[in-house]
Length: 300
Image 1: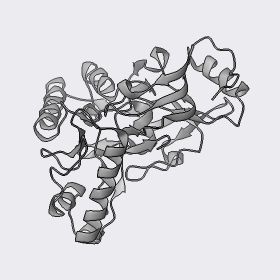
Image 2 (image 1 turned 120 degrees about the vertical axis):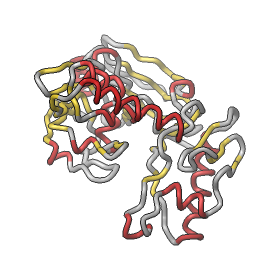
Image 3 (image 1 turned 90 degrees about the vertical axis):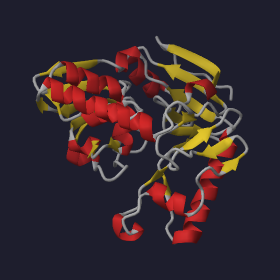
Image 4 (image 1 turned 30 degrees about the horizontal axis):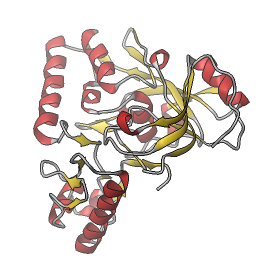
């Protein structure tokens, strides 16, 4: 793809590899990657970018499969200016590029409770807002006050928690909008209790999830309890005999079968085909159609 892009103060990389920046370590190149210097740089870029050029926002890529054909158009990756975290009383403001764990640690240091669960989410604030990320009994919807977003034309707006329309692993984020930052409501808490809870979460992750492998977050969302009979996605996958199932270099984790693993030589096709095979087997065994929680981006 050869196009003329607007002048920027940040960096634009042509035919940019994405594979090594994704947690699965798979995927093709982006036509272009743009790393804006700040919000003003991002705004001017979008204002002057042809509407015919597709734009994709990519955060930590912890819950994403980038397909082998790469991503057309411009991939936007937010840098240091979008990772800032500040505390004002019991309200924490975090940039969309801030890592969830660092937001939780900031609250811990300030003696603020309510967002310890974020230490168990392997992602960034922007991705968490987009999908209403959650773990250990809490979700973004429980603590977000509001969020700032930029539309495809470079205009900024603020949406309240209610306007974001959070539901299970979903938000009503307007199409072609990019999260810039969010405010989180916390409350004063006991420092030792906060630290103990975060340590418990980290220990639980290490014991139950394949976090030292090339993997992502949970592959499939848990189906509604009235449909699943109380079974979570991993239980349905296990009952369908998919634990340890392998296609190419992709494998269903033996440790937690709602996680896919790149054992070292998988490509994106292997991972996606394995996921679809799991869905087919679960549907055949239980009559329940699992919904992908991992986002799949780009061209096959």
